[in-house]
Length: 468
Image (cartoon, helix red, strand yellow):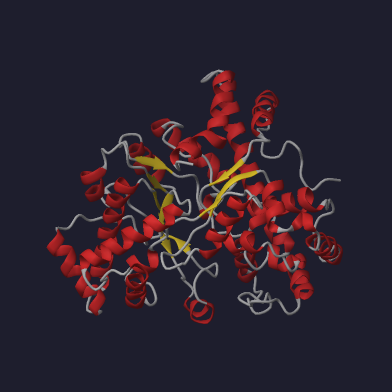
């Protein structure tokens, strides 16, 4: 008995399901283009074996451990944050005994896909099957076929983007480039410029980070112009290693367009530590507009990921630091927030800004109309809490009527869990096939148009949007 049904996620109505099958068959084997995610370049530069099943499936995946935490399993029990898991089998048994918690969630789809397709496991994970799962996975992880580079090739990944601090040396990316030049390995891994540590005054160590930015670039980052030149220099360095995009994880989508004297005074107060919360927000807003200006000049695609109340659990943040599964979506406004930036750059067809949201109420009211008008704007796919079958369906239903398909950018997996990448892309392909099949069945588009759209939603739009 298989863990996954071949018709999973397809429409229940027979005629529409048959159309979805045909559309999916045409895109199932297409290469994976992953333009935004949080895997680590070091995995591929060093190509070391993944040590155990917990390091593969539990430790890097906040979708997994946040669910367990919500049901009373402590992060200490899961050894989250440990460089090396001391008792991986014990942690795995805890995970397996709680696997029922994932019923009906996208996480269950992603995990079952990996268990079945990568490890040949067909009996459902549970406390009773935990040790068999562990033994099978552990044995395969010790083989050459499960080294990171081999998995990259088996998954059919054409290009994979990481997300990187501007203070990162990118030595692992440089090592991967050297592997390609020497013919050892041709996998394409590119960095993405994520400047949050040096543009968000609320970021831990912000002033020290800005000083480090100056040391890296030889610029005087105590001065506004020197600070901007340093950011421009780092963007150029990222481009030399293949970067095509930036990413901005601001609390809001607020933008500003201050005069140079105003921006310089604001920067000085932020660096001196005398600025309050309102000034911090204004500075972040100004920096989104500065990043758009730089993107127009250097061609990097700009991604804005706003609207998350990050590190909401103060106790977890104090003990474990950032990104421990305690980020919570909040309402996000775009129409007025983006107006200053759009007044300056909105009509620039040579600029690409990809907007994401955790506030689904904004799709039809704000985001689709904005992207359906401004040449520089595109809509990113359902993100984070909404990269689920239901979230993907809601996105298509709410955005397509105003923005169409061609003001969207395909799919990205946005994951730290490497083995979930093919599973996530498979879910997206199935959901798009089902959505297009419904349009065909309702005689809103012809099937030849659906075939073309399916290809575009899988590879065409993402390659063009991200300039890959």
